[in-house]
Length: 241
Image (cartoon, rainbow, N blue to C red; front, side):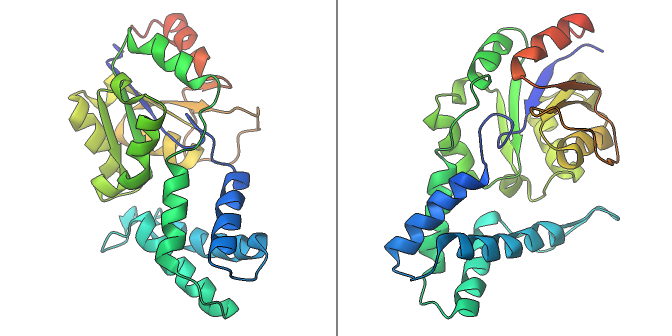
């Protein structure tokens, strides 16, 4: 293998996106809209509805995507509309979604992210492939001054498909002008990042920051790391360049 590109997932790979950040957003929207409900109660119900959206957007047994394509913003507005109705709240679902989008564009980077990217950028072309809307993925990269490190970026909204569907992977490979076997996907999820990459013929690095045991997965990662700065060592040990 001659490595010609490394493709990174964004959320929970390069930057943090834990529930605590969502709680802050929901606290703000509850206070700002004077909803009179505990923000964690609202969050728990909303997140349950959001998980239902994630399940319906792609039938992984047949790899059939939902049509027409539904962006995160569209789905989130629907989730807020439903949860406000269920709780009898006079809330603004569009304004609530806008807070979430704004905050997703400001998520903090993991400490290892920028040093790893800067070290790798001088060795091999880098790219970002994320299940995300453009309304917050691009602001995130700009916020952290990362845009110049990537030769290609694609999100699910642009591709019209979600990982692990091959459409989004084909999209980033086309932008990079590389063959699948010439690229490695780096991400924190076994299903979306690892399995999706393997389905198109890419290698995959699983970012297992907590050292979790590998759960049942459709495909095993080629490599496993806990820190993004380990990628350079993986490349050197396996003679990928």
